[in-house]
Length: 264
Ligand SMILES: [Zn+2]
Image 1 (cartoon, rainbow, N blue to C red):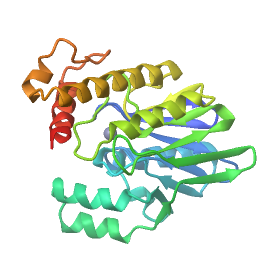
Image 2 (image 1 turned 180 degrees about the horizontal axis):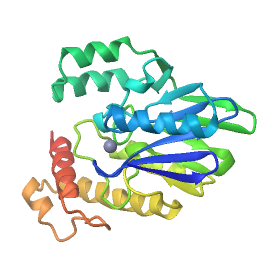
Image 3 (image 1 turned 180 degrees about the vertical axis):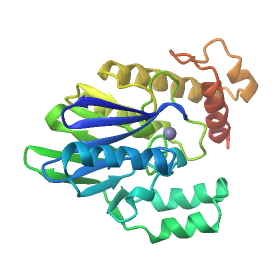
């Protein structure tokens, strides 16, 4: 794992054992706000300890951008602090528990935690040093993001990845909501984006991803009206390709899954 100082107030913990998954810590006046936990307890524990040592602060809160295992798996160091999530978090968490067969012990454990549900947005901190969290959906219905105005930093969760394609083969991904969210981000004053996986990016990455998704949705809508089969879509000369390396063919997986749902 690497701890990266992005600004004096923002530190990123990147785990190269699992697709460069990021968790993040924002230093407010009297507390530390952690965003996502990464995949496992040990890495999360080291990150929390390191940030407490660096800042001499004891009070922490955790915000979970969404309910996927690689962002909530390291939750143990946070079991005694408030955990802020989307109002759609528990619905998605229950589905994921079933889908990935997480077992009774882990299910009971999550039910004991102190969740604080965000309706549309939540602000944590003081006048000049605060972070705002907002509901977005897109990658998954419970996806939220954070924005730290002082340093103009956006914390995107898995609604933005870098150095790898965007990931959308899930049955509850909504590309329309995703595009609307990306359009909102493009209007905001942003210097850096902390992505769910990969290295920090500038705002131009948001635009490239939004353009890719817009082209894809238009192509898939046209394909449904022409009644093309999944095979015809995937081999079509106008089927968009992603602009970064895609060694595990996530884009094809995503298009296949999304188009099948559009045909239903
Ligand atoms: Zn992820």
